[in-house]
Length: 510
Image 1 (cartoon, rainbow, N blue to C red):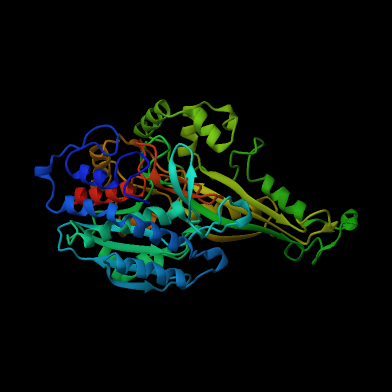
Image 2 (image 1 turned 180 degrees about the vertical axis):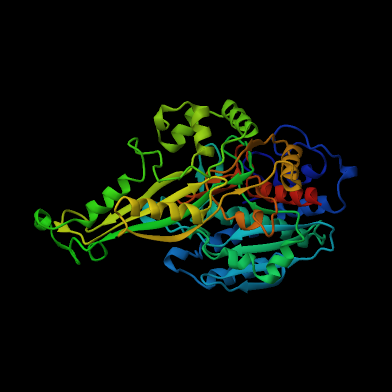
């Protein structure tokens, strides 16, 4: 945990080097500006980062130890209260919990007396986990060596999203430690239900005080660990929307089959709700088992533009298909599509996915029951100009038309897609900052995953929204999730480099 990073470049040398016009930890092109033209006080802020390394890491580990899991109603309101405490420690004022019909949000501001205001989106909740599936305890945040990368912090929420968010808070604390005023005003908006589809986040953003503060912002960004293992960075101009739901078949609602589990021998004379659900699921996709078959599903889906296709082509030419396949553990893309075609599908195709199927007994051995209830957990990913409300209605109408109106459709969360213009100040500043730090970013039409940016990009706010941040991590929603702390790869930034990137971004936004 000393001053020397795994790359052989001292953390102190790294942060001072960024202010003096040096190369960013071996990332390639030199920083454009020279020391004489740097903003006053910036070098002092960057110099504080390596001295705070141990405290910044400990804060992340402490936060990982307190998982707020909405699906399990775990650590509420403690998760929100802890988020509010972290915000206050980072310098936010007027910090308060915003009540909703579900889990509370957190709101705070920093008035630096600056001309520019920027919104920051946080989520303080994390996904569920099964400890037995992890090689390191998921709530301990242990430092673990990772071949080709260095030392990583492994734990649930490490990269999604506590690592990047902690790095951003650490940047604000570096300003405070250096006695320097922020170059921009900040508006912090946090939620605790992102991992269940943000069902009540609109209530947070549309709170009168929150909306009023956001109206003054040039845009909203979410901190991320944006580098892949090779040091590359994508700048996404949006994200797919999502609908999360359950389809439930029961003997009671169907009027056929048992009202409770019965012996499986009775399958000979009693209908099965499990087969009923399987048959209903089979109508949702074409015979290829992949293409959505819901009536009207694609009618609002906006095709990729020529500009977006060009972004994908550039990305395909610069990235290794075999590496991606190995990472995902797949041998073929759907329909044996070529690399660029597969990427176009990823960006343009709305999807219907089965997350899980549950019915009857699933423990060791057999139990020979005929279940009275069967459940499928479904998510649907949406592209512009689809909406969550319209897509859900189409699914219900599709099932009813085919005689499956008895199947319960219970939406648990979801939201519309989001899209931001390439020419927006927020995105252009991201591109400029990455280039200044020696990284040539690849443009990406939209993330195939989802986040509730629509509440910012849709009316009435209609603000640009995006992601920013150096650093690396992976394993979101999976066992052994991690965030890079001390990098042994000169192309990829660890914790200190990620913090410094946020300092640079805030000055650039000003």
